[in-house]
Amino acid sequence: MLSGQNVEKSKLKRLVFFILTAVLLPLNASTAKAEVVIKGAGASFPYPCYSLWTYKYYDVTRVKVLYQSIGSGAGITQIKARTVQFAGSDAPLHPEQLKEFNLVQFPMLVGGVVPIVNLKGVKPGDLRLTPEVLAAIFLKKVTRWNDQAIKMENPNLSLPDQEITVVHREDGSGTTFIFTNYLSKISPEWQQKVGNHKEVDWPTGIGGKQNEGVASKVMQIDGSIGYVEYAYAIQNLIPYALLRNHDGHYVQPNTDTFMAAADTADWQNAQGFYMILTNQPGKDTWPIVGATFILMQKSQENPEQARATLNFLDWAYQHGREIALKLHYVPLPKGVIRLIEDYWSKEIKTTGGERIW
Image (cartoon, rainbow, N blue to C red; front, side):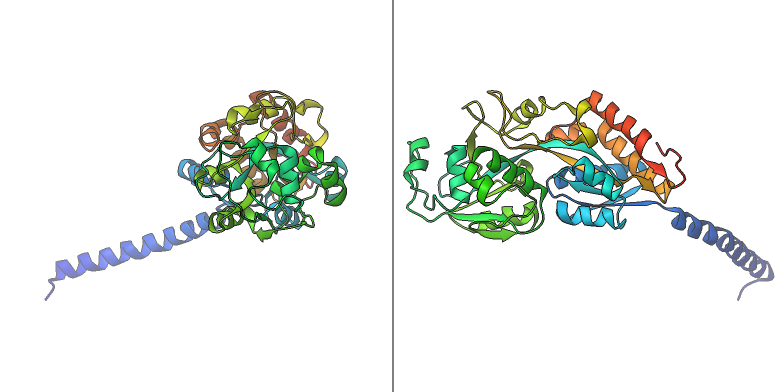
């Protein structure tokens, strides 16, 4: 049985608890309500890097950035509908399209696309393909791995008498845009029959969703070939083929050969930062290189959320370089970042016309 003193102490404790609850609950509710969550969606090409950036950014700032890897086409659809704060696309929009949809566009990273293969006994970099043979495979003109055109470039490989299974993207894809842009440059037949788009009418093959889906199907299907952003090949330990580049040299895909292609970019004179980096000259360039872009609304209805988005992107530029390099992406030069952030200041505004950055 409690003494009178203990009863009073118990009552006092309950009173203090009640007061603290009454004060703190509204405060916590207000804090939760004020929390800014940044939503992005689009390209799977940069997803390995973006996912680590968002994880690290939350660790440092406690600001949530949610990025869905759903493909460039779907990302563009979502930014047009204002359902996300930013979209990722590896296929840059033309200045006329940016104006039509009231969007801004700027590069975030540079990376490479590689052909990946599933061939018994073939390790990364063992197989060599000329541009012409690569196009012929995807045009269904070269259909078996022991075709003479492949054997000529690979005299030391034991190539099987096996059908080639092509794996391609089935969704609207910036990676497809980069890949088909390259094929259109090196093959007039490809340009005429198929062309360069985020989605094309493939002459052959089976589809996979996002880079992850293509990588998964190539790993499952013996005798297959596909194309993915380089980080997916490395992360999944999938053998990649070497390509003969613009100047006739076989080079390894890596940050150095991607950077060699990116060094040709004149971002200062690129209207709306529109830039294509495939089949660039130079003995050390990887031939299938592309920038991946961010799209945002030019007129922002929620300035606080827009500013939070730009803060995240600025952090990624300034502090995400090491993560990008570890994942075999090429960070942008500091001079280009200054151009981009000046662009933010001039182009991204509130609905009332006030600067956000």
